[in-house]
Amino acid sequence: MNSVLDRLLQGRDVKLPSLPAVALKILEVVQKDDFSVKDLASIISADPALTAQTLRIANSPLYSPLQKVESIERAVSILGVNTLKNIALSFVILDKLKECEGSNFDYDFIWRRVVTSAVAAETIVKRFKLRFADAFVTALLMDIGVILIADSRPEEYEQVLGDSSLHGAAMVKAEQKIFGFDHNQVGMEFLKEWGLPESIYLPIGHRNEKDKCPPEFLEAVKILRISDIISKLYHYGNDFAPNMVKDLKNTLIKSLKLETAEFDSLLDDIAEKTIDVLASFNIPTGGMKPYTEILQNANEELSNLNVSYENIVKQLQEANEKAERLAGMQRKTNKELQEANKRLMALAFKDSLTGLNNHRYFYEIMDKEISRSKRYGKNFSLVMFDLDDFKPINDTLGHKYGDEVLKRVSRVVDKTIRDSDFAARIGGDEFTIILPDTKLNNAVTLSERLRIAIERLSYSFRAELKDKADLKFSISVGVGVYRHDDENESKEHLIHEVDMALYRSKKEGRNMVTIVTSEESS
Image 1 (cartoon, rainbow, N blue to C red):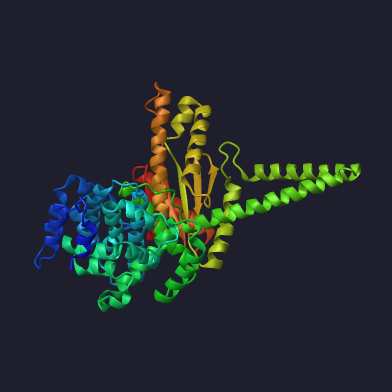
Image 2 (image 1 turned 180 degrees about the horizontal axis):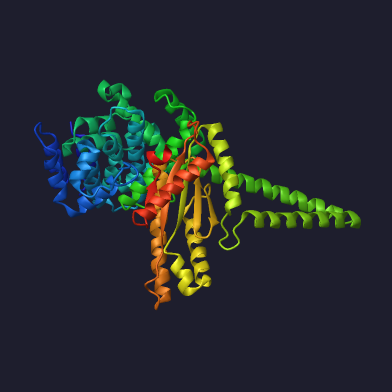
């Protein structure tokens, strides 16, 4: 009987991609009993592009190294051989598979899907300490059969892909009806021919038929199915989301013993890491956002609908009441008083120069965020920064140019933070950012993006000055986390900690981000 791949290619002038030479070398080395980490490092280091890409993802929030990884040898010591193998294999295999891109199939979409699945699988394995060493690369390759069928039989496969209601088991059933095989079988057989280990291709092949899966790979199948649902939740839009969220939450609570309160945090963590990894793979993010931000936007849209309805009702009421002159005049007076009060409130809480929140609003939000953190059991992060070498701008060019720098910096801050974050100018060239429901590593990532953006702004400003090109500015940043379960934590203590971290950034060279250390916490 012909194999699945033989039936796929029957009568077709199509060649399936071969395993890249560097991937073959990696697999040969790691399968030896006496191999050394230097053997793996030397293979990767011999390929400049692979080296650069591997170091880039090794430094991403997915692995969150405490120090910057600058060499493959360092990557091996920090990440371990298996993780480094998975990163390298992922890059070379994806690069090879991109040679298949020839039909009208939306490859960017499938790459976003599989990378999200891979990050979800890796994150779940790490968070819950599960046994699935090849989680990242297996999840990355679990839809490889879709790519191979779409490339080999594009016209026929459009019947499957054109029906947006087909997902999971329904999609497999449709493939079986049209071709006599499905993408899981194609992927399993293809990866087996490539020489990848059973721990990768068997969970892929049995993803939709657990009863035929060897017992030792059942947990891997469970992780693949969960990561696939998470990926669909982010990439199939509103038609899929309502039922999927409920089913996914129930699955995670039941199979992984996940606490209900951890659900949003886990999904946000996966989304934020995926966005960074997509950038490492040079794949468009497709506007992907963290789960809580999607919920917040949905709530804001609902609120806007309610406001619009209220405005219509109000307009009808005002139209009916215009006949009563005295009552109408009274209402007008009340409305003018309300608008005046709103303007006074804005002046009280907004910084007039930059348009950001002011120090009064910052301290008020800090109190609210601490109360919310204690109530819901979620930590939040605080970022504080000020401008380096700002005084020479005021002294040399005058306050007009100094004010312009502050306004431009504020615009960069506003573009960098999320809608749910709170930025404030608390005095002079000092700024703060409150990041609700945000872990330390994510706060550091945002701070680094902000630091780089301000540095670029400095170059642009210097180019405008021309004859004052020696003037420049950057930011020194401190970052810390409010821990709701720490009885000794307080607003004043956190602000002091982060301020001391900022001071260390200044002391150790400026233009850098420093996190709160244990010494500052003591």
